Length: 228
Ligand code: SAM
Image 1 (spheres, rainbow, N blue to C red):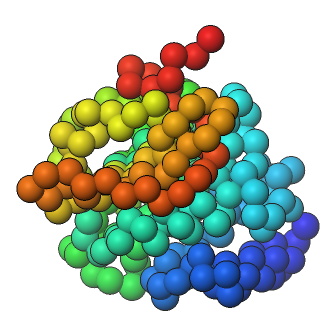
Image 2 (image 1 turned 60 degrees about the vertical axis):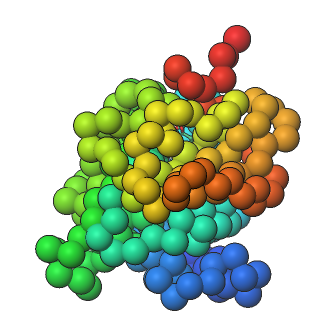
């Protein structure tokens, strides 16, 4: 599929997500336009980028569906200058959309925030690193290989944390590594069946809001699901 066709199909999807009120703020809409999913997929899968479904990228993992990335980016209430941790880098696409919100290139570099994205599958960490570099996000996104259920203590605390795999419960280290006033988004639930997207706000205490049913691959690692 030509670049033009890919761009046109992506724009139609963006417009549909706007009509569905899934993409709502002009910043997130613009982030989706600047970081289209097709730029983060292997050649043979680019033609499927604008289908609003998860796409398998090997190792039993997927790139999340555009509507889910849109919901998460809107609910994260991202602002320029914030430091963000993503658990589950996969292809690097979601991290790039977040970078467009915390470190947009039309703002001075001194005002930029940063995205740290951690991936447990070494081959996918490498895929994310290549995609981040190829698409010009290297100075805004850092890819780390490791168990993100433990967070990433080296750069904590974070303004925002997003987890893109479903956990049995909210991992304690992630709450600890969240700033006061920060937001953590995480799918919580069983491996195959019902999971809900939880929005955690850390104020004087911890406030949790249930954003509804979702379907994510399981979180692995110390605070993840025990895989058979
Ligand atoms: N955000 C990704 C993207 O834009 O392509 C999609 C994420 S995919 C739905 C979930 C990812 O979480 C998988 O790549 C999986 O290997 C990773 N993952 C699962 N458990 C993890 C853990 N404990 N630490 C880091 N990554 C983990």
